[in-house]
Image 1 (cartoon, rainbow, N blue to C red):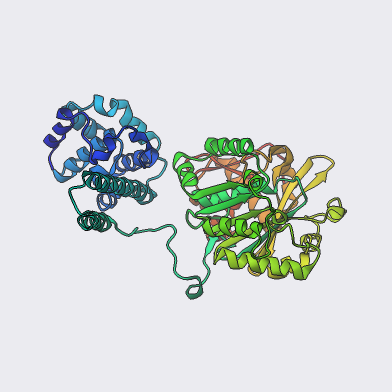
Image 2: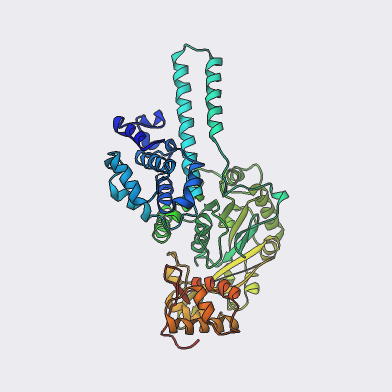
Length: 523
Protein backbone atom coordinates (compact mmCIF):
# COMPACT_ATOMS: atom_id res chain seq x y z
CA UNK A 1 0.00 0.00 0.00
CA UNK A 2 1.25 3.48 -0.87
CA UNK A 3 0.10 7.01 -0.12
CA UNK A 4 -0.81 7.38 -3.80
CA UNK A 5 -3.55 4.82 -3.20
CA UNK A 6 -5.44 7.47 -1.27
CA UNK A 7 -6.27 9.13 -4.60
CA UNK A 8 -9.23 6.76 -4.97
CA UNK A 9 -11.05 8.81 -2.33
CA UNK A 10 -10.75 11.88 -4.60
CA UNK A 11 -11.90 10.09 -7.74
CA UNK A 12 -14.81 8.38 -6.01
CA UNK A 13 -16.39 10.66 -3.40
CA UNK A 14 -18.87 8.00 -2.36
CA UNK A 15 -16.40 5.12 -2.26
CA UNK A 16 -17.13 2.61 0.44
CA UNK A 17 -15.69 -0.67 1.57
CA UNK A 18 -19.18 -2.23 1.59
CA UNK A 19 -21.71 -1.30 -1.07
CA UNK A 20 -24.45 -1.66 1.50
CA UNK A 21 -23.23 1.63 3.02
CA UNK A 22 -24.76 3.37 0.01
CA UNK A 23 -28.29 2.38 0.99
CA UNK A 24 -30.99 4.95 1.65
CA UNK A 25 -30.35 5.21 5.40
CA UNK A 26 -26.66 4.36 5.99
CA UNK A 27 -26.71 5.92 9.45
CA UNK A 28 -28.89 3.02 10.61
CA UNK A 29 -26.20 0.45 9.79
CA UNK A 30 -24.23 -0.97 12.75
CA UNK A 31 -21.29 1.24 13.71
CA UNK A 32 -19.74 2.95 16.70
CA UNK A 33 -18.40 6.41 15.90
CA UNK A 34 -16.75 6.90 19.31
CA UNK A 35 -14.90 3.57 19.19
CA UNK A 36 -13.50 4.41 15.75
CA UNK A 37 -12.31 7.80 17.03
CA UNK A 38 -10.70 6.21 20.08
CA UNK A 39 -8.82 3.64 17.95
CA UNK A 40 -7.40 6.33 15.66
CA UNK A 41 -6.64 8.69 18.52
CA UNK A 42 -4.76 5.94 20.36
CA UNK A 43 -2.64 5.21 17.28
CA UNK A 44 -1.73 8.87 16.78
CA UNK A 45 -0.87 9.33 20.47
CA UNK A 46 1.12 6.09 20.85
CA UNK A 47 1.82 4.39 17.49
CA UNK A 48 4.58 2.17 18.88
CA UNK A 49 2.35 0.76 21.59
CA UNK A 50 -0.90 0.39 19.64
CA UNK A 51 -0.49 0.11 15.88
CA UNK A 52 0.60 -3.54 15.72
CA UNK A 53 -2.39 -4.56 17.86
CA UNK A 54 -4.81 -2.63 15.66
CA UNK A 55 -3.30 -3.86 12.36
CA UNK A 56 -3.82 -7.44 13.57
CA UNK A 57 -7.54 -6.72 13.95
CA UNK A 58 -8.69 -4.04 11.52
CA UNK A 59 -8.57 -3.24 7.83
CA UNK A 60 -9.53 0.17 6.40
CA UNK A 61 -12.94 -1.14 5.30
CA UNK A 62 -13.76 -2.01 8.91
CA UNK A 63 -14.18 1.71 9.62
CA UNK A 64 -17.69 2.92 8.86
CA UNK A 65 -16.93 6.65 8.83
CA UNK A 66 -15.30 7.66 5.53
CA UNK A 67 -12.90 10.13 7.16
CA UNK A 68 -11.73 7.38 9.51
CA UNK A 69 -11.03 4.99 6.61
CA UNK A 70 -8.95 7.69 4.93
CA UNK A 71 -6.94 8.33 8.11
CA UNK A 72 -6.38 4.64 8.83
CA UNK A 73 -5.32 3.88 5.25
CA UNK A 74 -2.87 6.78 5.41
CA UNK A 75 -1.46 5.44 8.70
CA UNK A 76 -1.02 1.96 7.17
CA UNK A 77 0.75 3.41 4.12
CA UNK A 78 3.10 5.44 6.32
CA UNK A 79 3.79 2.37 8.46
CA UNK A 80 4.65 0.24 5.42
CA UNK A 81 7.05 2.93 4.19
CA UNK A 82 8.71 3.14 7.64
CA UNK A 83 7.66 6.76 8.03
CA UNK A 84 7.27 8.20 11.54
CA UNK A 85 3.62 8.48 12.58
CA UNK A 86 2.43 11.45 14.60
CA UNK A 87 -0.09 14.24 14.20
CA UNK A 88 2.27 16.36 12.08
CA UNK A 89 3.37 13.67 9.62
CA UNK A 90 -0.17 12.32 9.29
CA UNK A 91 -1.53 15.79 8.60
CA UNK A 92 1.12 16.31 5.89
CA UNK A 93 0.27 12.97 4.26
CA UNK A 94 -3.41 13.83 4.15
CA UNK A 95 -2.68 17.34 2.83
CA UNK A 96 -0.36 15.97 0.11
CA UNK A 97 -3.18 13.67 -1.01
CA UNK A 98 -5.55 16.68 -1.21
CA UNK A 99 -7.90 15.02 1.26
CA UNK A 100 -7.73 17.47 4.16
CA UNK A 101 -11.28 18.63 3.53
CA UNK A 102 -12.48 15.02 3.40
CA UNK A 103 -11.47 14.39 7.01
CA UNK A 104 -12.83 17.65 8.40
CA UNK A 105 -9.63 19.69 8.42
CA UNK A 106 -6.51 19.65 10.56
CA UNK A 107 -8.55 20.30 13.72
CA UNK A 108 -10.09 16.83 13.50
CA UNK A 109 -6.74 15.12 14.08
CA UNK A 110 -6.29 17.29 17.17
CA UNK A 111 -9.78 16.31 18.31
CA UNK A 112 -8.92 12.61 17.99
CA UNK A 113 -5.89 13.12 20.22
CA UNK A 114 -7.71 15.22 22.83
CA UNK A 115 -10.21 12.49 23.73
CA UNK A 116 -7.45 10.01 24.60
CA UNK A 117 -6.67 9.72 28.31
CA UNK A 118 -4.94 6.35 28.03
CA UNK A 119 -4.20 3.94 25.17
CA UNK A 120 -4.44 0.76 27.25
CA UNK A 121 -7.98 -0.04 26.03
CA UNK A 122 -7.24 0.21 22.29
CA UNK A 123 -7.73 -3.55 21.76
CA UNK A 124 -11.18 -3.33 23.31
CA UNK A 125 -12.18 -0.41 21.05
CA UNK A 126 -10.74 -2.17 17.98
CA UNK A 127 -12.87 -5.24 18.71
CA UNK A 128 -15.98 -3.05 18.93
CA UNK A 129 -15.17 -1.60 15.50
CA UNK A 130 -14.54 -5.10 14.12
CA UNK A 131 -17.82 -6.50 15.46
CA UNK A 132 -19.79 -3.65 13.88
CA UNK A 133 -17.99 -4.25 10.57
CA UNK A 134 -18.89 -7.95 10.64
CA UNK A 135 -22.53 -7.07 11.25
CA UNK A 136 -22.50 -4.77 8.21
CA UNK A 137 -20.96 -7.58 6.14
CA UNK A 138 -23.75 -9.92 7.24
CA UNK A 139 -26.31 -7.32 6.17
CA UNK A 140 -24.59 -7.08 2.79
CA UNK A 141 -24.63 -10.86 2.39
CA UNK A 142 -28.31 -10.91 3.30
CA UNK A 143 -29.07 -8.21 0.73
CA UNK A 144 -27.27 -10.16 -2.00
CA UNK A 145 -29.23 -13.30 -1.14
CA UNK A 146 -32.46 -11.27 -1.38
CA UNK A 147 -31.41 -9.89 -4.79
CA UNK A 148 -30.56 -13.36 -6.11
CA UNK A 149 -33.87 -14.72 -4.88
CA UNK A 150 -35.83 -11.89 -6.53
CA UNK A 151 -34.14 -12.54 -9.90
CA UNK A 152 -35.84 -15.98 -10.04
CA UNK A 153 -33.13 -17.21 -12.43
CA UNK A 154 -31.55 -19.58 -9.92
CA UNK A 155 -32.84 -22.57 -8.04
CA UNK A 156 -33.26 -22.41 -4.26
CA UNK A 157 -30.33 -24.81 -3.89
CA UNK A 158 -28.08 -22.48 -5.92
CA UNK A 159 -29.13 -19.45 -3.87
CA UNK A 160 -28.60 -21.39 -0.65
CA UNK A 161 -25.15 -22.55 -1.77
CA UNK A 162 -24.20 -18.96 -2.61
CA UNK A 163 -25.48 -17.78 0.77
CA UNK A 164 -23.57 -20.45 2.67
CA UNK A 165 -20.40 -19.69 0.74
CA UNK A 166 -20.65 -15.98 1.53
CA UNK A 167 -21.44 -16.69 5.19
CA UNK A 168 -18.38 -18.94 5.38
CA UNK A 169 -16.26 -16.08 4.04
CA UNK A 170 -17.60 -13.84 6.80
CA UNK A 171 -16.93 -16.57 9.36
CA UNK A 172 -13.31 -16.77 8.19
CA UNK A 173 -12.87 -13.07 8.96
CA UNK A 174 -13.71 -13.60 12.61
CA UNK A 175 -10.76 -13.74 15.00
CA UNK A 176 -10.86 -14.39 18.74
CA UNK A 177 -10.22 -11.51 21.05
CA UNK A 178 -6.71 -11.38 22.42
CA UNK A 179 -8.10 -10.01 25.68
CA UNK A 180 -11.79 -10.94 25.61
CA UNK A 181 -13.51 -9.05 28.48
CA UNK A 182 -16.34 -11.54 28.91
CA UNK A 183 -14.73 -14.86 28.04
CA UNK A 184 -15.00 -17.44 30.80
CA UNK A 185 -15.06 -21.20 31.21
CA UNK A 186 -17.84 -23.27 32.71
CA UNK A 187 -18.59 -22.16 36.29
CA UNK A 188 -18.16 -25.64 37.69
CA UNK A 189 -14.60 -26.05 36.41
CA UNK A 190 -12.95 -22.81 37.45
CA UNK A 191 -12.53 -20.98 40.74
CA UNK A 192 -14.28 -17.72 41.45
CA UNK A 193 -12.29 -14.65 40.55
CA UNK A 194 -12.70 -11.15 41.90
CA UNK A 195 -14.75 -8.57 40.00
CA UNK A 196 -14.18 -5.77 42.50
CA UNK A 197 -11.07 -6.05 44.65
CA UNK A 198 -11.94 -7.46 48.10
CA UNK A 199 -15.66 -6.73 47.59
CA UNK A 200 -17.25 -8.79 44.81
CA UNK A 201 -16.50 -12.18 43.25
CA UNK A 202 -17.95 -13.98 40.24
CA UNK A 203 -21.13 -16.01 40.91
CA UNK A 204 -21.61 -14.54 44.38
CA UNK A 205 -25.04 -13.91 45.83
CA UNK A 206 -24.95 -10.43 47.34
CA UNK A 207 -27.61 -9.04 49.66
CA UNK A 208 -27.82 -5.21 49.57
CA UNK A 209 -29.92 -3.93 52.46
CA UNK A 210 -31.03 -0.72 54.09
CA UNK A 211 -34.07 1.35 55.02
CA UNK A 212 -36.32 2.66 52.26
CA UNK A 213 -35.57 5.96 50.49
CA UNK A 214 -31.96 6.19 51.64
CA UNK A 215 -29.99 5.92 48.41
CA UNK A 216 -29.52 2.17 47.90
CA UNK A 217 -30.31 2.43 44.20
CA UNK A 218 -27.99 5.42 43.83
CA UNK A 219 -24.97 3.67 45.34
CA UNK A 220 -25.75 0.46 43.43
CA UNK A 221 -25.87 2.34 40.15
CA UNK A 222 -22.48 3.77 41.07
CA UNK A 223 -21.16 0.23 41.62
CA UNK A 224 -22.65 -0.95 38.32
CA UNK A 225 -21.15 1.97 36.39
CA UNK A 226 -17.78 1.17 37.97
CA UNK A 227 -18.10 -2.48 36.93
CA UNK A 228 -19.14 -1.56 33.39
CA UNK A 229 -16.49 1.10 32.86
CA UNK A 230 -13.60 -0.38 34.85
CA UNK A 231 -13.51 2.65 37.17
CA UNK A 232 -12.52 2.13 40.80
CA UNK A 233 -15.38 1.84 43.28
CA UNK A 234 -14.68 3.71 46.53
CA UNK A 235 -10.97 2.98 46.22
CA UNK A 236 -11.45 -0.70 45.33
CA UNK A 237 -10.00 -1.81 41.97
CA UNK A 238 -12.39 -3.18 39.34
CA UNK A 239 -10.57 -6.12 37.77
CA UNK A 240 -11.91 -5.61 34.24
CA UNK A 241 -14.86 -3.98 32.45
CA UNK A 242 -17.82 -6.27 33.07
CA UNK A 243 -21.27 -6.58 31.55
CA UNK A 244 -24.02 -5.67 34.01
CA UNK A 245 -27.81 -5.98 33.73
CA UNK A 246 -29.87 -3.88 36.16
CA UNK A 247 -33.53 -4.95 36.50
CA UNK A 248 -35.09 -1.86 38.05
CA UNK A 249 -38.68 -1.70 39.28
CA UNK A 250 -38.43 1.73 40.89
CA UNK A 251 -36.56 4.25 38.71
CA UNK A 252 -38.54 6.44 36.32
CA UNK A 253 -37.14 7.05 32.79
CA UNK A 254 -36.46 10.74 33.51
CA UNK A 255 -34.54 9.81 36.68
CA UNK A 256 -32.41 7.36 34.70
CA UNK A 257 -31.64 10.04 32.12
CA UNK A 258 -30.54 12.35 34.94
CA UNK A 259 -28.20 9.70 36.32
CA UNK A 260 -26.68 9.10 32.89
CA UNK A 261 -26.08 12.83 32.44
CA UNK A 262 -24.21 12.86 35.76
CA UNK A 263 -22.06 9.89 34.74
CA UNK A 264 -21.24 11.49 31.38
CA UNK A 265 -20.07 14.60 33.21
CA UNK A 266 -17.76 12.66 35.52
CA UNK A 267 -16.48 9.73 33.42
CA UNK A 268 -13.75 10.08 30.83
CA UNK A 269 -14.89 9.54 27.19
CA UNK A 270 -13.56 5.99 27.04
CA UNK A 271 -15.06 5.12 30.45
CA UNK A 272 -18.41 6.47 29.27
CA UNK A 273 -18.11 4.41 26.08
CA UNK A 274 -17.42 1.27 28.12
CA UNK A 275 -20.38 2.08 30.36
CA UNK A 276 -22.73 2.37 27.37
CA UNK A 277 -21.44 -0.89 25.90
CA UNK A 278 -21.57 -2.91 29.12
CA UNK A 279 -24.43 -1.53 31.26
CA UNK A 280 -27.91 -2.76 30.39
CA UNK A 281 -30.71 -1.11 32.39
CA UNK A 282 -34.25 -2.51 32.09
CA UNK A 283 -36.96 -0.33 33.61
CA UNK A 284 -39.80 -2.65 34.49
CA UNK A 285 -42.73 -0.43 35.47
CA UNK A 286 -43.99 -0.22 31.89
CA UNK A 287 -43.34 -3.95 31.41
CA UNK A 288 -45.65 -4.70 34.32
CA UNK A 289 -48.45 -2.64 32.81
CA UNK A 290 -48.56 -5.13 29.93
CA UNK A 291 -48.93 -8.04 32.35
CA UNK A 292 -52.16 -9.12 34.04
CA UNK A 293 -50.18 -10.97 36.69
CA UNK A 294 -47.46 -9.79 39.09
CA UNK A 295 -43.89 -11.15 39.01
CA UNK A 296 -43.82 -14.48 40.75
CA UNK A 297 -41.46 -17.31 41.60
CA UNK A 298 -44.24 -19.90 41.32
CA UNK A 299 -43.43 -21.98 38.25
CA UNK A 300 -45.89 -21.74 35.37
CA UNK A 301 -47.49 -18.43 36.31
CA UNK A 302 -47.37 -15.44 33.87
CA UNK A 303 -45.30 -13.59 36.44
CA UNK A 304 -42.77 -16.42 36.59
CA UNK A 305 -42.52 -16.54 32.80
CA UNK A 306 -41.81 -12.80 32.76
CA UNK A 307 -39.15 -13.13 35.44
CA UNK A 308 -37.57 -16.13 33.72
CA UNK A 309 -37.43 -14.28 30.39
CA UNK A 310 -35.89 -11.18 31.97
CA UNK A 311 -33.20 -13.13 33.80
CA UNK A 312 -32.31 -15.62 31.08
CA UNK A 313 -32.15 -12.94 28.36
CA UNK A 314 -30.05 -10.58 30.51
CA UNK A 315 -26.69 -9.93 28.85
CA UNK A 316 -24.80 -9.17 32.05
CA UNK A 317 -22.41 -11.30 34.04
CA UNK A 318 -23.66 -9.32 37.03
CA UNK A 319 -27.41 -9.15 37.57
CA UNK A 320 -29.11 -6.70 39.93
CA UNK A 321 -32.68 -7.30 41.17
CA UNK A 322 -34.03 -4.07 42.65
CA UNK A 323 -35.96 -4.54 44.90
CA UNK A 324 -36.43 -8.19 45.84
CA UNK A 325 -40.08 -7.92 46.91
CA UNK A 326 -41.12 -6.72 43.44
CA UNK A 327 -39.67 -9.89 41.91
CA UNK A 328 -41.28 -12.15 44.48
CA UNK A 329 -44.68 -10.70 45.35
CA UNK A 330 -45.91 -14.17 46.34
CA UNK A 331 -43.09 -14.74 48.87
CA UNK A 332 -43.68 -14.24 52.59
CA UNK A 333 -40.55 -12.26 53.50
CA UNK A 334 -40.93 -13.07 57.19
CA UNK A 335 -40.94 -16.81 56.48
CA UNK A 336 -37.31 -17.96 56.26
CA UNK A 337 -38.24 -21.19 54.47
CA UNK A 338 -40.20 -19.24 51.86
CA UNK A 339 -37.26 -16.87 51.33
CA UNK A 340 -34.81 -19.77 50.93
CA UNK A 341 -36.98 -21.31 48.21
CA UNK A 342 -37.22 -17.96 46.44
CA UNK A 343 -33.45 -17.45 46.49
CA UNK A 344 -32.87 -20.99 45.26
CA UNK A 345 -35.18 -20.37 42.30
CA UNK A 346 -33.47 -17.08 41.45
CA UNK A 347 -30.09 -18.81 41.66
CA UNK A 348 -31.35 -21.49 39.28
CA UNK A 349 -32.56 -18.89 36.80
CA UNK A 350 -29.39 -16.81 36.93
CA UNK A 351 -27.27 -19.78 35.75
CA UNK A 352 -23.95 -18.89 37.33
CA UNK A 353 -24.14 -15.09 37.19
CA UNK A 354 -23.20 -12.82 40.05
CA UNK A 355 -26.48 -11.49 41.37
CA UNK A 356 -27.23 -8.67 43.77
CA UNK A 357 -30.56 -8.64 45.56
CA UNK A 358 -31.77 -5.33 46.98
CA UNK A 359 -33.89 -5.63 50.10
CA UNK A 360 -35.35 -3.43 52.85
CA UNK A 361 -35.29 -3.51 56.62
CA UNK A 362 -38.45 -4.20 58.53
CA UNK A 363 -40.36 -0.91 58.62
CA UNK A 364 -40.87 -1.12 62.37
CA UNK A 365 -37.07 -1.15 62.80
CA UNK A 366 -36.10 1.54 60.30
CA UNK A 367 -35.85 4.17 63.01
CA UNK A 368 -34.32 1.84 65.56
CA UNK A 369 -31.82 3.30 68.00
CA UNK A 370 -29.31 0.69 66.83
CA UNK A 371 -27.16 2.34 64.14
CA UNK A 372 -25.22 0.73 61.31
CA UNK A 373 -21.94 2.31 62.44
CA UNK A 374 -22.37 0.95 66.01
CA UNK A 375 -22.97 -2.75 65.36
CA UNK A 376 -23.36 -3.57 61.67
CA UNK A 377 -24.00 -7.31 62.06
CA UNK A 378 -26.74 -6.83 64.65
CA UNK A 379 -28.16 -3.97 62.59
CA UNK A 380 -28.36 -6.30 59.57
CA UNK A 381 -30.56 -8.70 61.57
CA UNK A 382 -33.37 -6.18 61.08
CA UNK A 383 -33.76 -7.09 57.38
CA UNK A 384 -36.94 -8.98 56.53
CA UNK A 385 -36.13 -12.69 56.32
CA UNK A 386 -32.68 -12.01 57.80
CA UNK A 387 -31.85 -15.58 58.78
CA UNK A 388 -32.52 -17.00 55.32
CA UNK A 389 -30.95 -14.13 53.41
CA UNK A 390 -27.80 -13.96 55.51
CA UNK A 391 -27.45 -17.74 55.55
CA UNK A 392 -27.65 -17.96 51.77
CA UNK A 393 -25.69 -14.85 50.77
CA UNK A 394 -21.95 -14.84 50.09
CA UNK A 395 -21.80 -11.24 51.30
CA UNK A 396 -24.08 -8.62 52.84
CA UNK A 397 -23.81 -4.92 52.03
CA UNK A 398 -25.70 -2.44 54.15
CA UNK A 399 -26.19 1.30 53.96
CA UNK A 400 -28.06 3.72 56.15
CA UNK A 401 -28.22 7.41 56.98
CA UNK A 402 -26.95 8.29 60.43
CA UNK A 403 -28.03 11.63 61.90
CA UNK A 404 -25.34 13.80 63.45
CA UNK A 405 -26.14 16.94 65.44
CA UNK A 406 -23.30 18.91 63.85
CA UNK A 407 -23.00 17.41 60.38
CA UNK A 408 -26.56 16.40 59.49
CA UNK A 409 -27.25 13.03 57.82
CA UNK A 410 -24.23 10.94 56.88
CA UNK A 411 -24.65 7.93 54.60
CA UNK A 412 -22.70 4.88 55.80
CA UNK A 413 -21.82 1.80 53.73
CA UNK A 414 -20.50 -1.43 55.21
CA UNK A 415 -20.13 -5.07 54.20
CA UNK A 416 -19.35 -8.46 55.64
CA UNK A 417 -19.34 -11.98 54.27
CA UNK A 418 -17.54 -15.26 53.96
CA UNK A 419 -14.34 -13.59 52.73
CA UNK A 420 -14.65 -9.88 53.40
CA UNK A 421 -15.24 -7.31 56.09
CA UNK A 422 -15.74 -3.62 55.34
CA UNK A 423 -16.43 -1.66 58.49
CA UNK A 424 -19.15 0.94 57.88
CA UNK A 425 -17.62 4.10 56.41
CA UNK A 426 -19.29 7.42 55.54
CA UNK A 427 -19.35 7.87 51.76
CA UNK A 428 -21.70 10.67 50.69
CA UNK A 429 -23.72 13.47 52.23
CA UNK A 430 -27.47 12.93 52.04
CA UNK A 431 -27.95 16.04 49.88
CA UNK A 432 -25.62 14.55 47.25
CA UNK A 433 -27.14 11.09 46.86
CA UNK A 434 -28.25 11.89 43.30
CA UNK A 435 -24.80 12.95 42.16
CA UNK A 436 -21.81 10.73 41.44
CA UNK A 437 -19.42 11.43 44.31
CA UNK A 438 -16.81 8.89 45.35
CA UNK A 439 -15.27 10.96 48.11
CA UNK A 440 -16.78 12.51 51.20
CA UNK A 441 -18.37 15.91 51.12
CA UNK A 442 -16.37 18.56 52.95
CA UNK A 443 -18.85 18.57 55.84
CA UNK A 444 -18.39 14.83 56.31
CA UNK A 445 -14.60 14.69 56.47
CA UNK A 446 -14.53 15.46 60.18
CA UNK A 447 -16.95 12.62 60.80
CA UNK A 448 -14.70 10.32 58.81
CA UNK A 449 -11.78 10.86 61.18
CA UNK A 450 -13.44 8.73 63.81
CA UNK A 451 -13.57 5.75 61.41
CA UNK A 452 -9.78 5.62 60.96
CA UNK A 453 -7.73 3.12 62.88
CA UNK A 454 -4.87 4.39 65.03
CA UNK A 455 -2.33 3.27 62.40
CA UNK A 456 -4.21 4.95 59.54
CA UNK A 457 -4.56 8.14 61.55
CA UNK A 458 -0.79 8.16 62.22
CA UNK A 459 -0.09 7.46 58.54
CA UNK A 460 -2.41 10.26 57.40
CA UNK A 461 -0.80 12.75 59.77
CA UNK A 462 2.66 11.74 58.57
CA UNK A 463 1.63 12.16 54.91
CA UNK A 464 0.15 15.53 55.75
CA UNK A 465 3.40 16.73 57.28
CA UNK A 466 5.35 15.56 54.24
CA UNK A 467 2.97 17.33 51.84
CA UNK A 468 2.98 20.52 53.91
CA UNK A 469 6.75 20.70 53.55
CA UNK A 470 6.92 20.11 49.81
CA UNK A 471 3.56 20.57 48.11
CA UNK A 472 1.95 17.97 45.78
CA UNK A 473 4.11 14.86 45.42
CA UNK A 474 4.18 11.48 43.72
CA UNK A 475 3.65 8.39 45.86
CA UNK A 476 7.30 7.45 45.47
CA UNK A 477 8.36 10.89 46.74
CA UNK A 478 6.08 10.57 49.75
CA UNK A 479 7.49 7.11 50.51
CA UNK A 480 11.04 8.47 50.45
CA UNK A 481 10.24 11.29 52.88
CA UNK A 482 8.06 9.45 55.40
CA UNK A 483 9.70 8.95 58.79
CA UNK A 484 11.06 5.45 59.32
CA UNK A 485 8.67 3.05 61.01
CA UNK A 486 5.47 4.87 59.97
CA UNK A 487 4.65 2.61 57.03
CA UNK A 488 6.26 0.26 54.53
CA UNK A 489 6.15 1.28 50.88
CA UNK A 490 3.74 -1.58 50.09
CA UNK A 491 1.32 -0.56 52.85
CA UNK A 492 1.54 3.08 51.82
CA UNK A 493 0.70 2.28 48.18
CA UNK A 494 -2.20 0.09 49.32
CA UNK A 495 -3.69 2.72 51.64
CA UNK A 496 -3.32 5.83 49.46
CA UNK A 497 -6.18 4.93 47.03
CA UNK A 498 -8.52 4.48 50.00
CA UNK A 499 -7.47 7.83 51.50
CA UNK A 500 -8.01 9.49 48.11
CA UNK A 501 -11.42 7.84 47.65
CA UNK A 502 -12.44 8.92 51.15
CA UNK A 503 -11.46 12.49 50.43
CA UNK A 504 -8.54 12.99 52.84
CA UNK A 505 -6.08 13.24 49.94
CA UNK A 506 -6.62 14.72 46.50
CA UNK A 507 -5.09 13.56 43.21
CA UNK A 508 -4.07 16.60 41.17
CA UNK A 509 -4.61 14.70 37.90
CA UNK A 510 -0.97 14.05 37.06
CA UNK A 511 -0.41 11.35 39.69
CA UNK A 512 0.62 13.81 42.41
CA UNK A 513 -1.14 13.99 45.75
CA UNK A 514 -2.07 16.90 47.97
CA UNK A 515 -3.80 17.16 51.32
CA UNK A 516 -7.48 17.98 50.89
CA UNK A 517 -7.91 20.24 53.93
CA UNK A 518 -4.55 21.78 54.91
CA UNK A 519 -6.24 24.22 57.28
CA UNK A 520 -7.46 21.57 59.67
CA UNK A 521 -6.02 21.14 63.12
CA UNK A 522 -4.01 18.01 63.81
CA UNK A 523 -6.11 14.85 63.62
